[in-house]
Image (cartoon, rainbow, N blue to C red):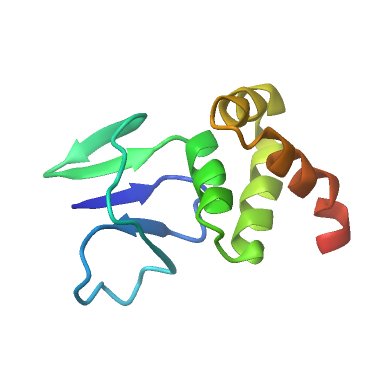
Length: 109
């Protein structure tokens, strides 16, 4: 099963339970043993995407490369209201982590 993040537009992030060869155009791959299908949207043919908020939270939760986390948060803060991200992060127990990345965003760039 594959689940693509639809956010941010770059990099493309793929979550997969498949351990075989993955197409070389995938920028970042997160392997998880079981994909939670909550908050996913079926695109077609067993391909699902998640919302922006979930993607950012999962990048933090799965300890992704900080470059991808900061890039995602920067892109999000330039386009969307942080209230939705804070609410989603709070529900997942990641609010303090999200706020830490937002507070240090200017130091990163």
